[in-house]
Image (cartoon, rainbow, N blue to C red; front, side, top):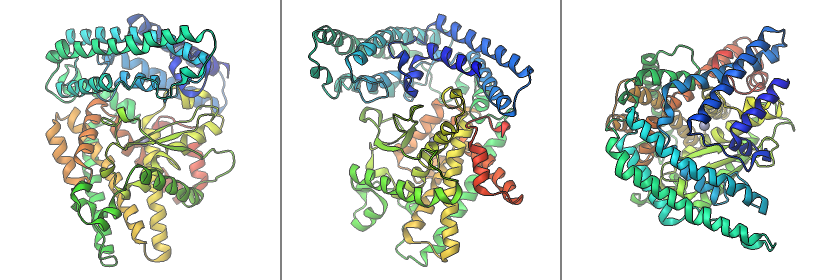
Length: 563
Ligand SMILES: [Zn+2]
């Protein structure tokens, strides 16, 4: 439909970085300063225009498929537009959303922005000039925040300061491969001078300016709270974000909190039963929950080898092995696999300067033409805290049949571009990721049924899977705890510590994440429970499981109420 194309083209001109991200290179010299009022007004106009165009189209006769697409688009546009009421742009930077670090990554030549040819460099420098201006706008929005009493917690901004100071100290923004030296054309000297001015001189100066503003002005105006309740309309803000991330129309937050508590108890019981059963068969089985130690504290080498990786190489090798193994077992059991679906993805480490505040792993989707493959990034910051037993489920979640498989499926089914590349629904996407983990568990349980017994390493995989599920159940309790019941860091940490095997640093990262991305952490369990319920109904009706999954995946992401 022409409307979809017009929409995406207009969207790209307002969000040119997104175009580059998905592999469309026509906008590579453009950047919008998203922090300026006139740009916000423009964007809101764009949203309103397309809401009205979609409404007009919906009144005409449509195929079922088009009606579906139009309704998804309308929903996304409306949710986006509503978000502007809450002035989230007064909070332009925190330890989880620090655009400086993204641009440092772009400068290093290791991000999705191409830095290979002279033209790439020229484009990049023109973008960089806009970005340098937008750092001033970030400071101005923080000043607005101070005036309107919408500021960050002190603890969070202290973390941001440390990150900015580290970037300045380590000069992470310098290009990693000295590509510029490879060009010998006449014009390259000008380019080099430009590069030196913008990246080597002005960028660190702007970072310094931001860091000084935070240190000397902003911190004094930050609050000592931890969640949205620090703001006057915090409850409404949270309600919006819960709706945004869970796609529930009318969420009952205390109910979500209690659902979390019930799930925590159920999963804990599963873990206990697993160990009671298999401790008799494998007497040396270790329950990592009882360890609570980092690798350095574990003296027994055999125990260490069972639970942890040796080094970075060991991590990458093991995950690549798991990838092959899962692709041969779990995938064909539950899905119709054919050549049309691109199941290939890469596994890499998270850039070093991003390790500190990031979680254990994340997935970056492929470009729309698959020239850049989807990538599963692993945080190697604390190799002594990556439990081997979680790897099976982690691999399933980020790779196949989790995020990589779901986004590839949607792409390969030739859905309109906006389905995958203009927003998506966290509850569908993360719910699917967690549901994929559940399938991995079902696979192990079916093996147990067939062979009567799991192998020792499979017991660890199953334990790891419960473990990861536990984390998502804990999120229901703690996210609502922080933003609805006013839990502070300590209360959240103590609750998590009771049920989680995560290292202390990982738990801290998790809890800060809930604090800075309210409602997002709810999407996993809410989405998974919906998919599980649908699966049970389909099985009752004797539907083929592979076809059932095809039906969920074929149209890509959508709000849960449309399933
Ligand atoms: Zn995920």
